[in-house]
Structure formats: structure tokens, C-alpha cells
Image (cartoon, rainbow, N blue to C red):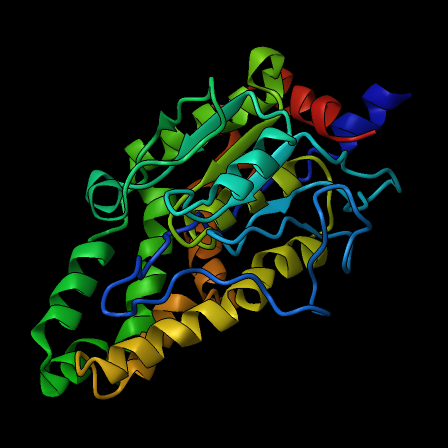
Length: 314
């Protein structure tokens, strides 16, 4: 019976919520779509790899349909239900038209106010207004502004070098678990997905679409029964889709003289399994398991977890 499969698939969840970093700083680098031949296609074309359906836009590079993945019991996550994305402030008119074609009913913005003020509000199809659910970046945005704005290579090395940037990101991921306000925002978004109605299809995003958004996607996919290894691949796929744009940002910082060694930013631009592991270690220490985090940390009851499965899989 489907309900039996559903209960057995409550395989728990946890991962990294996209902390979009590096808006555009000194890089006069606008987002660029991946080159022809890379993992990209139109919104309703065939998946690129591992079921991933990337949605190529000119003003955002990490927009994906979460559908297509196989669950433990051989079923498949439905396409067209939930989308993950990076910032939507720089979308072109053509991009907005593409989003309109997805039939979105709700957009959730995880950016903190400083990010929205810097990058601008979402550009969305007519009739859509983003729901603001800011997830704390643990001071990442202000730290980056301070580091880059200093133009001081010594200070930049002191703040980001020798593993400090990597350690900072691990701390960010821990706050996804430890901060009660963050947990409330994740929980509200998962409830929106579970109970659908006027909120489906739904898109959630942050700035880079990799940390806060990545964590939400990890939670959702694990909760509906997608195997861990598959979900980690989805998490790490942000590195593929963001690579060209992030490299352009670093080059812009160097050419403008703001950073002598912009490679110091790579740990902040990337997602790494170590970041995910930091959050999961926090989950295990505080809640015992992913299921415990979903139920106790996020307050999702059995009905909601079953509804997630029913909404997403089939």
C-alpha cells in the first residue's frame, strides 16, 4: 500500500540552506548561462543527469526543478512541484516569462534584509509576491562586505586564509540546526509544500541557491525517501552550475584591485560535503537523528511528513 511505503520512506532529513554569497561586488559580472553542451535544457526538456532538470536563465544560474529523483522504493519525485533557485533580482523579461511558464503559486525568499537591499527585490511574474522568510547567514554577508571593501590583502588573508573561510561556513551550517528562528523558517516552507493547495507549485531561493536553499532541498528530498547519496549529489551540483559565474566574480575582484588573492573566497562560494557534515553532526548531537530533527527541531508531525511524500512522489 502507498501509505505503508510512505511511512517507511520517512527517511529523515537535513542539509545545507543556500547562503547565497557574493552578490556582484566589484565584479561587474552579471550571471551568465552555462555554455552550450553543459548540463542545461529548457524547463520541460529531458533531464541532464541523475534526473536533474536545470532551468537556464540569463539572470540566474542555479535554478532547478527538484523532480526526477528515484526514491528507495523505486518511485520518482514529481517534476513541476518544487523549484530551487539563486537570487531572482536580475532576471530579464525573458526569464520572467520562463518563470511564468512554470505556473508558480508561491515564491519563498530566504535572504536577509541586507541582501535584499543590496541586490534588489525579486523580479517575478505578474500576480506573484515573494514571501520573506529570512534565514540568518551568521554574519556572512557583512563579513564579506568588510573583507572585500577593505582592499587589504593582509586583512583578507587574516580573515579568510588558513582554513578560516571553510571553518566559517561550517559554523553557518550549524546555525541551520541550532538557531530557532532558522528552524521555524525551514519548517514553514516544508509545511507549505506538504499541504500544497494555493502554494503549489512553489519555488524557494536565497542569493546563491546553494546553502540555505541546499539545506532545504536536502531536508525535503530525504524526507520523501530519496537515498542519501543521491541527495548529496543534488547538493553538490550547485558547484557545477555556479562555477563559471563564481570564477567571473573572482576575476572581477582581482581586475578591480579589490582582492589580490580572490581564491580566498572559494570556500565561501562553494558547497562542500564538510559543510553538510557539520550540520548533520549538530543534528545527531541535539536530536539523535534526522527524523528527530524533523519532528522535534522543526516540529513536523507525522501527518505533515506523510503529506510531503504524497505531494512529491508518484
